[in-house]
Amino acid sequence: MDRPTARNRSLRVSFPGSQGTQLDARLDLPDLPPRQFALFAHCFTCTKESKAAAYVARSLTEHGFGVLRFDFTGLGGSEGDFGNTGFSSNLADLRAAGDWLRENHGPVSLLVGHSLGGAAVLAVAGEFEDCRAVATIGAPFDPAHVQAQFGDALAQIEREGKAEVSLGGRPFTIRRDFIEDLDAQPQARRIHELRKPLLIMHAPGDRIVGVDQARQIFEQAVHPKSFVSLDDADHLLSRASDARYASAVLAAWASRYMPEPAGSDEPPVPAGLVRVAERGTGRFTCTVSTAAHHILADEPTELGGDDLGLSPYQLLQAALGSCTVMTLRMVAERRGWPLSRASVDLHHEKIHAADCAECETREGKVDRIERVIHLEGDLSREQREALLTLADRCPVHRTLHGEIQIISRLDD
Image 1: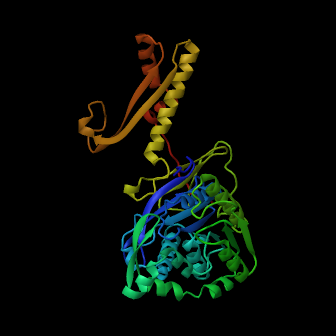
Image 2: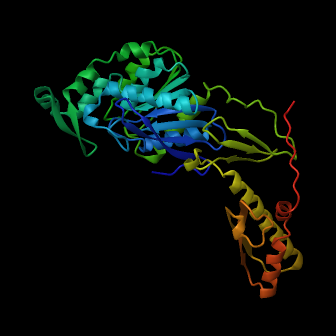
């Protein structure tokens, strides 16, 4: 599976599912504050790491969405026994995922489901009042259609109450309750009463869920509704090109129905200022903006953050380190010294003042930043020593050692 691009971040999260066990999930976030949040439901016996799930998450994050994808009970990294689950428990897991996302990050504006996951999002979409659009990929009209994958085991399930079925080369125990639950779903009514923009994507040659299932969904739904053919893709979108195409179409379509993100109308940052503001997601994540640049600041997960950016002290070390490197480069160029590359490793810690012989403070703790400077190039020993001395003259170094006046006031 391809990894997300560097501008996206995938966080490992978990939350209680329908049966009280922990569900394993990934929260994929864009670099900028998410415009909206999407919830993805994977295919039958698949996981959140499927190719379709990964590409959909990547594409949506590139369009500014935050995406939560999770493993249903008993699948992937989630706890619980798959043999004790059913379509109704999947719907309850979806509700639990939506509740977690809503409580911790933001409302669920987009529901996306692949295969039986598509049937699941169609079933619960009417309950998600904040949902603005729904999309399915290779989804069956009737959840009971999945029984076609059980073959001769259906008779054994009816006769003995359960049977082991091989799906995707893996054994799964299917119980009679699972079959009865599928048969009892009022899917036609749910689709007709959806009243939300719906995108149906399906491959005409899908051998697992025939394209006629997509036709039935389309006919039962009311406008606005759209159908996109995935041409010769297979059911699992196992070819990367098919997964990328479906994901790109989905992201572009969904963007039409999403409002602009909160704060998008904020005035630009004036030249010469640095603006730090809460991102609106997570506990500590902040946006750090200038007139031309944008980065994130955060705390690591062990301190309650989402680890989406550098911590405040890491930003401080970055300021010192970058100023050091720039100063060394400027000096080397002015003096014609053969410095091919400079780099700096920094480490911050708080130490007892009594352990610092050079410190004026004698009680409590003091901040210590260790700076290790790496110089590459055909430099003489004298040139290297001179550059080490000059590193202490970089502007940020002098600011940290000088008297600093910080004035705080409230914005009128």
